[in-house]
Image (cartoon, rainbow, N blue to C red; front, side, top):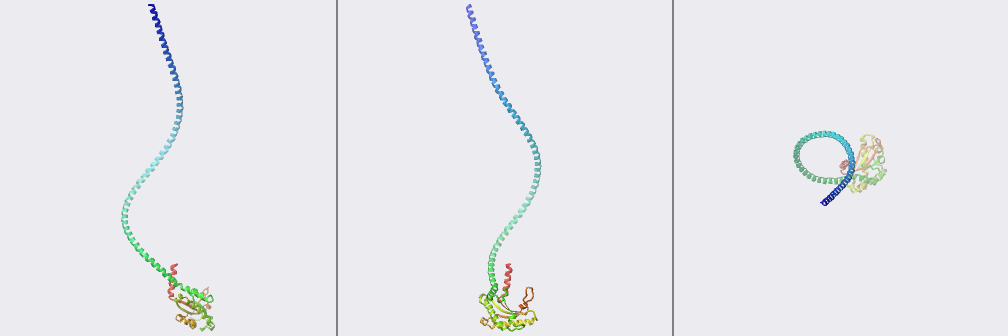
Length: 337
């Protein structure tokens, strides 16, 4: 019995020891878990503390940025206030412009009404213009035909003008031929082509009888003069008259000088008609003698009569239709100017 109790006590203490050992093991495990948890918590705390520090730094940076943004926002608000004032001014301007536009729109509507009326009138005008255009085209066609006829007339006129100029240029040609034939010894008027002889060479003072000493020279010069006129067929065909004119100075009466100048002109013509060349070419029918008294005096540069030169015999020529050609030449000169 005692042994059984002893064995039961031994078993009890063994069980108790095992229990206590189990509890100790559990306690140790619990302490290990707590220590492990503490280490982990401490590690997390350090990590969180580092993160917190970083966040604090970031927060400080954010605060600085917020301050900067607040300052910028204040500037923007100031600008916005200024801009708002400008917007209000601009809005007033826009309102004024809108009012002006409304007024202009009203005027435009009025103008459109007038334009519509004018458009209707323009349509009527266009219709009339079309009719006029047709008439103008017709007139232009007629004008074209007239211009063609006009061009032909102008062409014919130019041809006629050239022929007339050719005729009016004959006198110039005659004078050139006379100068070439007579040289510088005998004076030839550059405008009329007349040849002059001093009365003192041909006649005694107050007399009308030709000097014998002057006849040979008169014959020689006259024949050169006439041959120059007859040698060119163009000149010959247009030659009308050969005129011998007597001229005196203004001394004495007109009738006395007229008679003297006439007698001297006849005396010269009678002598020239006796020449064989004149007879051969039958120049008698174209020769005329005329006395001019002192109607055509020769004046010096001061406009005073040169009596010595005024007493003269002139031999000149006229061309057929000479007066008409002079008038035509005058008209052509005026047209060209």
